[in-house]
Amino acid sequence: MSPNSTRLAGRTALITGATAGLGAGIATAVAEAGASVVISGRDPKRGADVVQRIEAAGGQATFIGADLGAGATEITRLAESATSAAGGAVDILVNNAGMILTPSPTAEVSEDLIRDAFATNVFAPFLLTGMLAPAMAQRGSGAIVNVGSISGLIGTADSALYSATKAGIHSLSASWAAEYGPWGVRVNTVAPGPIRTERNAEFEQHVAPVLARIPSRRMSTVAEVAAAVVFLASDDAANIHGATLSVDGGWAAV
Image (cartoon, rainbow, N blue to C red):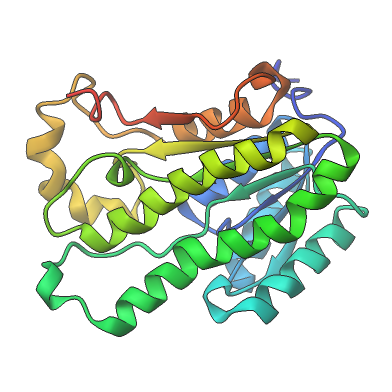
């Protein structure tokens, strides 16, 4: 048994956007830490694959399909279904689902894309948190970890829209920490830099010049970012409220 396997024992967690990439890695790490995990995403087959991997390793997981960009009705359904699947109480919420945007000049970004990006990256976690955090506060405990981005901390050419949505998430974390912290609910952010996933391989040349200048000289791994999420969700971070933990190899520092 891993020494990490009891860190979140007895708790339930909802991880959004958890059918692939970073979300799947977070779901796996949270399950390995002992939590019963509800994963959500748009692809039932990929969701079933993640559930199978978690269960094969001895963990507990359930998949609930949801498109968080579809609006309030879908988000309400997810909140209610996840609470039911979690046995009546979600102890940990990881707002990971987000629209990844290809770098584009501001003048070429359409109104529809702006609306879609904010709907998925800001509107959805705002509503979902509002639906689940009050019950956590009523119980006197809970942890919310929002997945932001290094792009929400620094300016990057051709990434104004994505950066704006992630800066919004960082701001929401601070506000929610002030709102829910007095009732025992901790809200924090993990802000990854580039992560070595299959999808991000196509952007490796784009970020290579920057990677050459940062302290670590490399992308983060999915496991490294997921470990930061587990830490912030656990009692090891019991007095950490409203923090933004960068997992970026030092990019923000330079």
